[in-house]
Image (cartoon, rainbow, N blue to C red; front, side, top):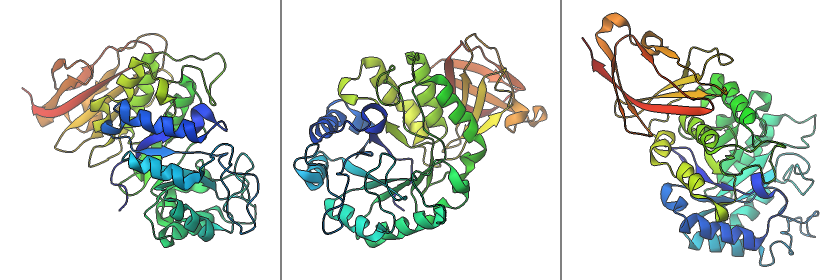
Length: 378
């Protein structure tokens, strides 16, 4: 098994789009190390679309754009590996990539061999320009087998945006993670809609193949390729986004420019308690408590390893809420003699034992997370 917990890294698309260069990627790799992100668990540096020329060469191979990458991809891969990091690249299952560059349709085995020769460790495989007469699952099976035949361990990141009920079959295609959503943008509504929409599908994520609910927008502040006009998020809103992704065991692929992070962004992306939840060895899906998200906060409860639990409250509303969490809804009947003991993950505050319900205050556009233990109560 290539991945036992959700992969962590950085992808170029959210901030830079087509504006990628060798020096940018090298500087980003350097920053991954110097900022402490590598020590926090982030290890993949992934180049997205627009890295090649518009046409293959006379031998049918994809050619890196010599203006963007003058020393070629093997040189870049070697540099990233020298820092103790892993290198990822991009291709597509259709006849061309989403931005119109050469893709891997019908050339899966040739391209996988080329990627292995470069030394990549991760392939993001998109879904644009798929011929209507070809079965989508078949195309991912092809690349899954091609990567296995390449002779190199390459993480297979299937990015078909949730099409064809991907959650039902993608594990059998050999993928290590799969996109189950449309594209994120730098707004609260975007990550809210993605998170709530994925609740019914979270149980399909497990060691070996993780539900990828798209790349992180933490630290973008309205700048970059997926900026949303008129929207600049607060640090509290970015914390809520990051905590949701960790609660849902999503791969954590940073999308901001990590060369220029402020301290608040660093603190969010390197929050040890939240990363520990995302990387919990049992990687169990959370479940939603209640369900009236248009009126109340989104309340999630999740089993962790070592007989621990985590309770998360996510308030997307502008004003505060005081939600009740009925303990029988998480599996604790009043007559059981057991209740919950909570510890605030952010402040360390101990919350008194609760027997039948928990009533917690949460400000607007913020989140609260608690480590929970089941304890005997009188």
